[in-house]
Length: 235
Image 1: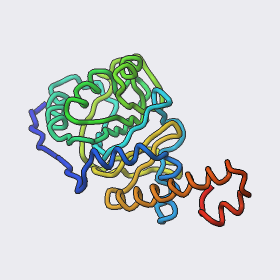
Image 2: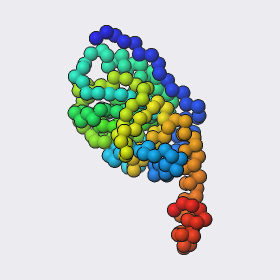
Image 3: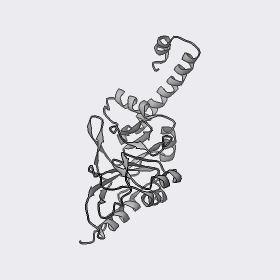
Image 4: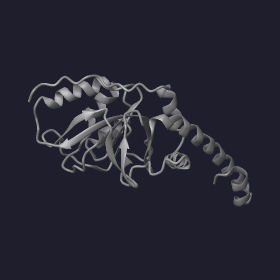
C-alpha cells in the first residue's frame, strides 16, 4: 500500500482543560444528562453496556475521536495512522473509539493506554472491547468499554482515521461524536456534551449539584420532601 503521511489534527479547546475536567469529575452522569435534556439536548448518552473497568473510575475530557474497522490488514498503513494520531492528541483529551460492532478482539489495551497517557490523554471510551484489563486497572487509566476480550487486534481490527466525526451507539439511536465534544463517564455510563455547550452544561449541572446537596441535608434533617422540592427544585 502506498505510504500516506497523516497531518496533525489537533483540536485546541478554548478553556483550561485540566480545570474543567476536575470540575466535571465532581459531578455524576445523571446530573449532566439532566442538564443537557433541560436545554433541549436529548438522548446524549451512550446506550447501556459501556461501563468502567472499575466502578470508581470516572472519565472526563474533550473527545479525541478514532474510527476503526475489522480488517486483516497488517501493512505499514497502521503505523502511519498511529504516528499522525499520537502527535495530534492534546492534554486532557479522552480517546473515544467506534468499532463498527466488531466483536473479534480487544480493540484497546495496555500499550494503547501507555502511549495515550504519554501524549496527554486522560482516559478512553471504547464502543467495543478492551484487553489487558487488569493492567489497565493497575495503571489507574480510566477505561470504559462494552466487553473484554483477550484476542490481539493486529490482523483483525485497526484504526483507519482519527479526529473526524464518528458514530457510537446511543440510547435513542446513533450519536455523532465530533472532535472536541465533551466525554464524561462514571459507573452509570457515558454522556456526550456538544463542544459549544460544554461550559454552559457544566455550570448548570454545578448549580443543580449545589441545590441537591441542600435538599439532601434538609431531608436528612426531617423536612417534608415536597417542601424541600418546592424550595430547592431538586431531589
